[in-house]
Image (cartoon, rainbow, N blue to C red):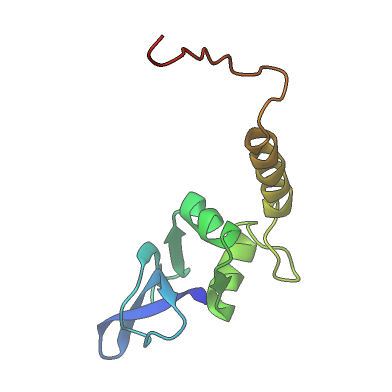
Length: 120
């Protein structure tokens, strides 16, 4: 499963975090797929910045946010209080209906094939 979580950076006693998309099996500071933002808890007020489009993309493909990242996403109105992505269900339904419409071939037009006899 893919998770959106914090990756600790910075020095001892001076934490700084990157918001990353990583496989759940990877260690906290191990391999990751993509960096989508940063979080600095030492500034007053705390500084959080992330690419909302990329976060929405990863939520739409099923990535699960950690508790801390879910709190940031709720403040950015990308998640509702229950933890579900806002507006992604409708977008997924629209994409699914568009793909089924495109997948159906048109039956009206039959291809015309001319057959010529061999050796005539």
